[in-house]
Image (cartoon, rainbow, N blue to C red):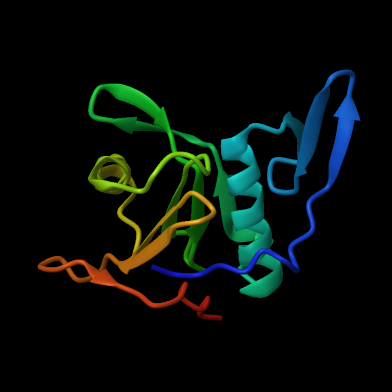
Length: 147
């Protein structure tokens, strides 16, 4: 398991009526702050401000076809050739990371085919090198972006 320190990650929050909203710097819009969105935004901030993943090469909540079904991935970071480099699945903090969440990510992976996988609920974080087909190689930290 990887320990992500979100303490230096700043989120842009505001109240809209009775609801707290958060600004997504990738989608460039305000969203209702749900527990899953909270984790997704902290993960994005960590990727951008701590790991310096290029903002222009990050996509959030885009529709993909998984078999005959339409699904939405949480985060994909692309390499400089605009090929999927890291696929991230974010869950609400109360959702435990289990084989079920891994299988959801693997279903998306069949379509996206990224080099790395990331599963997080903000408390539990796992990252794997997906380039090794025979075995899952779990990492001790998130990969550095190769410039």
